[in-house]
Image 1: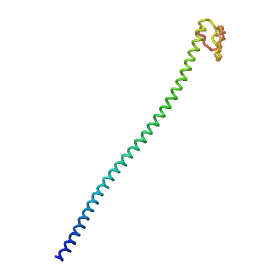
Image 2: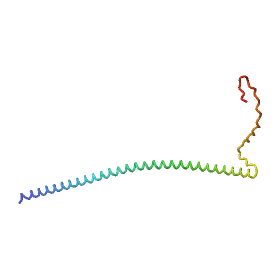
Image 3: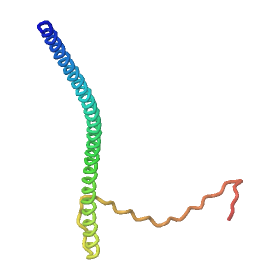
Image 4: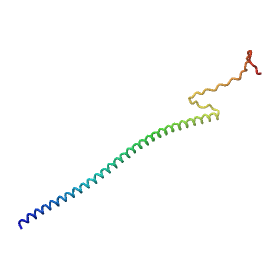
Length: 139
């Protein structure tokens, strides 16, 4: 029995080493599969990040455009308010002038000098111009 014991121990040791190598091989395959899965996940996340960044840049451009439109509209609104105030002031002034004319009172002086239209002179008589020789007189 003595000679078979070392063989059994040697065989058992070899079998244990083979099992350990098989386990390591399975662990390596499992870790490689996990690594591949993680790489795919990272590639997907990278693509999503790039898409998000493109969308964010587009969103910033849209927001900048909307802000520009808003500022333009604000300026237009301010101009319209000024025009409205001027129109209202002109309306009040015209109304005052109309009321003054209706009451036969002089209109308030608004600071603008208005020239009175010149009266047209009466028609002058046309002078008789003597006709020269060779001209035709249709009278």
